[in-house]
Amino acid sequence: MIRLIPISVGMLLAWSPMAEACEPPPVFYAPFSTERAANADITSFISQNAPVVRDVSLGRGSAAQESLCGGQGYVSFTIALPPGAPVTFADLGLELRVIDGSFPRYALPEGPISSTLGAREDFQHLGSWFEGPPARHKTISAEIEARFVAPDGTRGKGARFTLFSEPEKPKTAEEQTR
Image 1 (spheres, rainbow, N blue to C red):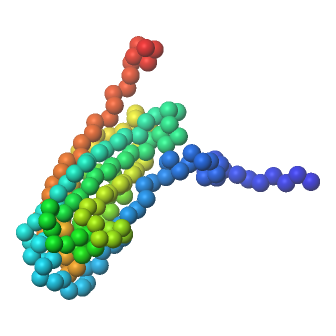
Image 2: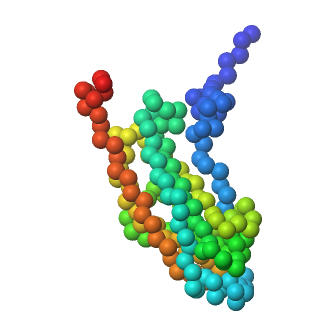
């Protein structure tokens, strides 16, 4: 007797070796506890220094027929300690928040976070969201603030950076035939 097993496209995709390409980026952070005492060195450092923002990149999803991961948007950036910092990301947390504009929910963590990679001098964030095919994309315009957070919850000075991207304009019939 032949037995039929119901299967969904999602299950087929999950078995596909290409499915890994569409998965959200790995998470290298965890919630940062702000219920501990902070030593004076950390508090002093946070009050005098802002994070350094480097390597900001924003990628938009492509049309679904062009890519297995069509419609997936990605953001990445690196937040670093100032040169000569007496602390590492093992000693303090980081807070990322949208202070102006809008940015896809879940692409940035909520609340203070800590690195799961140990005593590092930089913190790389990789975020993703589903936005559908290019015809459904909206303009992304957001000012993001990164701040150091002490174990006692003290927040430091913020470093701001902008994420901006306009949707691709649809190609005309003539452009598509070229």
